[in-house]
Length: 234
Image 1 (cartoon, rainbow, N blue to C red):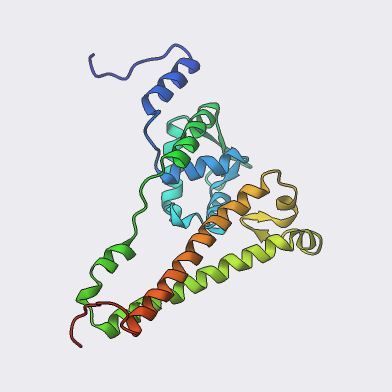
Image 2 (image 1 turned 90 degrees about the vertical axis):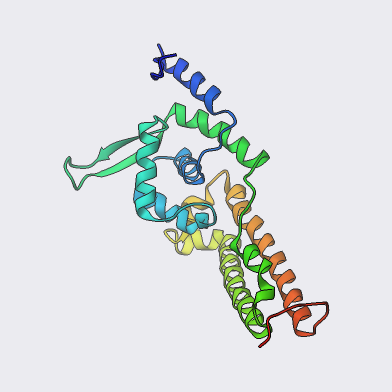
């Protein structure tokens, strides 16, 4: 081998080689998320950003606009997506992206990897919890309660989304352009895969609700000194 990139006779050869090389290599979450959105249909970068925001993708995707544009560029270079200018030519023309055959085939493999072998979740909360004994009791309770408040805000946000889902038919009639989960109500109502969009909100909602229940009990046990807690002296 001379270290040069091999040349493939056909697109099919390149596709097979790519799948073989990457069959056990998960892509960066941002790339997978972008391919998922474009698998639903072509879109401008700003519209993709809005969908990421509205669907709560910030849990696993870098949401900065600059990162999204950079990632779209990487995916385009690799042949997973293709972009084309829309409107008048020139700097002001907007670029619209669509997924390619190679992108669809790659996404098919990546979806399987995401479900059957997801990366181990990493949370700074657990790291902080491991050092809780280095704080004073009052400080420990203060930061735990502050986090509990943030969880409550998240739960309220989820419940607002669920209320919109429950009233989707009415909203689609009275306010058809209202954005729900990154999609106008009138379009969301017609989606065949609406159940999957709901599932994307239901799973983290149940997880964060369970986390709230545990945290409330943990805070209560510290307050009532139900256990051998150790803290720094006040």
